[in-house]
Each structure stands twice: as C-alpha cells, then as structure tokens.
Image 1: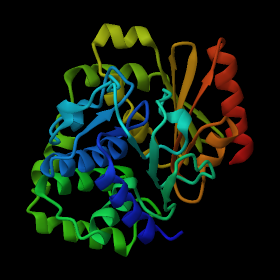
Image 2: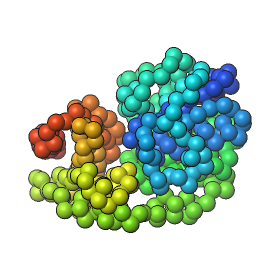
Image 3: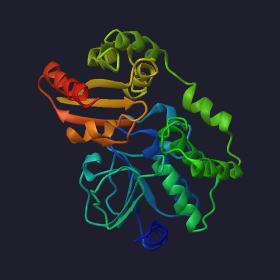
Image 4: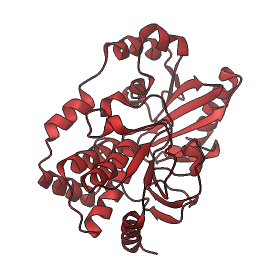
Length: 317
C-alpha cells in the first residue's frame, strides 16, 4: 500500500481513537522527540486526547524549548486504544511492552521489521520529521507555528544540518513550506545549538584524551567513564555530540563513541562519504543510517568487547 493511502488511513485511525499513546525510542534523539511533539502539538490544538511516552529518565535538554516538551512522560496511561510509534525502527528500541491496541509506525530507517498494524516507512527521507510532514500535507491539515518548529528541528538534526546523502530538493521544499508558518530559524538554532553547559566543556578534554586512531587515522575511537559524568555533572545526552567533533578531523572516515550503561556497551557510529556504518551496527543487532548508526549490546568486559567492535570495523573499511 502506498504511503499516501497509509497517511489517510493514519488520519482515520486518529479520528476514531479515544486516547492515543505516542511512543518514542529509548536514548532519544531530536528526530524521535521533535516528530512526536509535532503530532502532540497538533493533537493539543485539535483537542485530541493523547500522551507522549519515553522510557528514559532524562531527555535531551537542548530540545526543551519545543512546545509541549514538558508534557513528555515515562509513565504509561491506564487506557489507550491507539499507539503511534515514532522513529522506532523496531519494537526493541522502545524498551517496554504495551497493552493490546491498534498500532501505527512511522519511521525512515531501513528495516524489514514491520511490527505495527499500519507501517509507514520511507527509507529515502532524511528524517522521520520529513516523512511526517507528508501526513499533514496529504490530509490537508494546518501546520501551526509550533508544529512547524518541531518538524524543522527533526529535519535539521537528523540530516546533520542538511549534509547527509538523503538530503535532496524535496527536503528544502519542505523547509521552505515550514517557513510559511512564521517559524524563527534564528531562534530555533540559537536554542538548539548555542546553549551548551559548562559541565559539557569540562567533559570534552576527558573524553578527547581517550582518542585513539587506527589505520592511519581512518578510524577514530573515544569513550566516556561514568565517574566523569558524576565528577562534572554533565548531561550524558549532551555529550553524545562530541563524536561529531572527532569526525571533523580531516583524516578520520569513521568515528566511534563507547560508553557503558547498566552492563551494556552503547556504541555510537559516524562516518563520511560512502562508508555505511549502519551495516556495522546491524552486525551487532543495532541499526541506523548510512552515516549515523548505533548499537547496544550486553557487556561484562569493556576492553574485550570494544576491541571486537574495532576489529570488525577495520576489516570492513
């Protein structure tokens, strides 16, 4: 079934629902949060009962300027008859099982794991926010300023500031259309990019001192220790962007950022050009995009598991 038809079906499901649970993935990024808030703002404006859920105790602070950010909850409501999964490539990314209900999944990751009753996927889109824009457009729904701000943030962030290979003419046509809702780009980017904490700057030298280069600098790795988070008071989600600083090194083609969370090794991967790090992530049961992916695996020996991942990447590149 084509996405245009599915978007109309999605709108029918929303109209028929009594209470909607919007679900975002664990370790949330801007695309899952801002896309869910785009829906949430539309629902608030049209008096549609709903809740946005994320299992995490901590959400990305840099997104707290978006309307209804403070309404996101890690508590599941007692009743809902429709679940909308936003930017969740597979059900495992959610981190929780829910009661039986009608389900919709809207996502732009490459995956054959179509777990919902209605699956709306387009792997050519730069972000789920860009895909979600079509939901509003095809159903002739008004995009308010608050909805447009959320969609812009999702597109901007997941396209890595319009630099990924999936960014195309249509992406900029959508952004141009969002400007018709009188969003203030300067205000958005000031909030998104220019509110770094002092604790993050204290963390940067600690993480950068772990930098190792392999294969004449093509692969770069960094890691963070949990004790540094306690020492600096840093927001660990805010520190995730340090991997992009490493990727900016001229010789580096692949950058990897390791950290331990509850006896699991979380690994963020970034790449330049034609190197597809999503294939690396998939090998370790993770996922993502060509130039930005991640994985999270059980780990009792950080050094051994880190070396295993590095060895695999070196053989791949």
